[in-house]
Length: 467
Length: 109
Image (cartoon, rainbow over all chains, first blue to last red; front, side):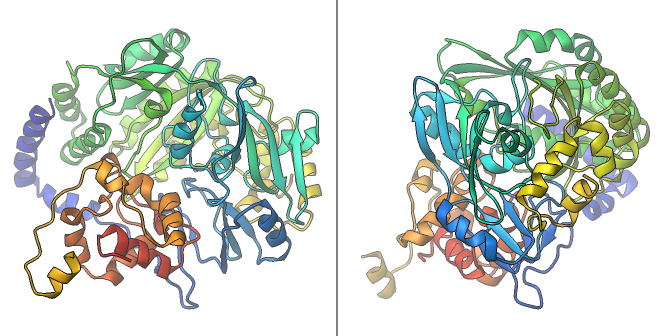
């Protein structure tokens, strides 16, 4: 299949490049963006997020070995103090000229309870490491995000989620946390002990204190069957509510300008292990880019060529433990905007976004991702009090993403969407107050824990200024 | 023994590709560097799907090494292709990153 696709695209590329001087345009667009210098005039090393949008030169980088060292450090270190996970947030939640705080050394399982199916985990644990570690004690997280590079603390702080009818985001399965406040006080919180801190800081953007440990309520380790199949987008959108009911985890990726989508499902199974093969998503993505490069200004031809390599593609199937299948390596860097909508608004908003992109943003080639998330009661959870349908749009890290704000965000806001805390959006405190019923209460807790605003950088000040 | 042979001027055997398992089995001898490597680099540099050069695989590293250590350090700090700035090691100093690059490139520490 891949060979046939490459021959098709290769032939088309040769014709188009010769006819239209396309090669120059593609080469121009493929240049790496010029980044800031690796070391600044004062000798401080660059920090940048994964997508390359946000950066800073921290005066101090700290990686405490344990919670006690963290507590000693916080009252007396340059501000703003910003905890950093894996740098996978797309906005400026992390940049600091003060202290960049890595929790990488606070990682691994601290305690577990087989009967209650809980595990207490260091907040700096990477999700990619957490899967196998939990598997060793017979536990797993039923829900993982698309990428597993993030730290647990960073993922929780930003409301990171996976997908599935009745399946909550990662923070929805947290039963307790330990937080070190900026004055060095260690707070243990759960539904009975300091419940206001638990509710306010469970999705806390690293603005309430530094989370050192988290207790997760997990599931027994199980085997799942992952199926990825190409389907017609129109049909899929009609069937989506029923499909979401039928599968434990379901999501889809609309492939713009093709009329097709990739439906991804995971279901518990007893079938024998069939390991996932080599990553083919990256190849497919680059083929979509090639299609865009060749036929950006001729959408009809772009659609016809897409049909050549998408129609009849066999489904990709894998059977294994969930932590091996739910998340992906995603080596191609991108920029992302994602909003969480009341579930009943998701399909209509998605249809409008597809129409706008295909009409007005012909250079878009990244898939549009749609997921479903169960409600929870964390005060700053984007899923607070409502089942949500998520819509995410992406741009290659080398390319412009203004269209997200101009074309897509108005649709998402009109549908009462709440932005993902770790992704691109234009909202500020007044907007957020209107979207979160407990916003004022959360801000009161935040001020009580960090009265001097030692954890606030300019981006967080924008979000919380009037809170 | 390998060092002694090299010192005697014997021709170096051409590098061979490593498997993921062979790459994953390599660890820096220095304990602090090993911890940094384990936390920050290993997840991507021992997995083919991540499209990062495999640790210790000279067939992948030698062309990169030829660019010079300073170029590789600048790439590590600023990020390159799928790798984020700092290579996931936000506590690493430039000297740490240099040592990690040397190890992963199969040049000892």
